[in-house]
Image (cartoon, rainbow, N blue to C red; front, side):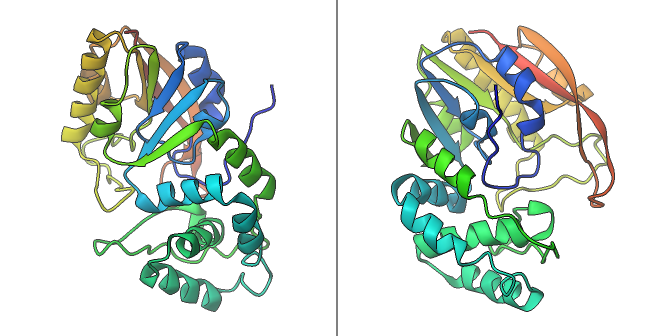
Length: 271
């Protein structure tokens, strides 16, 4: 079956692991994703309904805009993908506009522009909540029109929520399946721990996520979690029914050209 790509570039995106993830996702009537990110799992599974959440309000606002105002959004977003707009000076002007704008539709347009023109497709904010990813210097950034329309079509069966992982996991009921893709745990205790949003996801939250998964399992709701394979994650997920190790090739340093295979863990709580 053809894999569908997300319209956003996303650090730690699950496109390379889709086959393994789908192999371990249980059946159910609704998939709940507390860390939806770019939505690769949502776009490539066949559940009847989806509850998709993220703590990043820009992301959730964008998804609701694409869902409800698809044609208008695509038409306006296309205007930002020109040779003239692919310049450092323009990028920083539009980044400033994004940080100052309070209009959800305009922010949604600029979010896609910044995602596709910024360095490595990163989504990063400073402590003031300002997007601060530098210009990426790509020859011709790709405008994901087909991906936007596919997302909009799939989104008609989805609800999007800007909320904590705890809140969205609290929505799960019997018959649902939960897939958690939290920000990666550090490969070592001395490794730099990257905050994907202004609310950084620390070790306490990583452990709390595992506790919530055990609680859902007791309520007969299955949960699948993906993360780095480390001594800590194995300790956190010791309540899982199975642990599967898979290798994924991705960048693991600030040098985007340095890519090597890293062990990833899929922890399944069968429910």
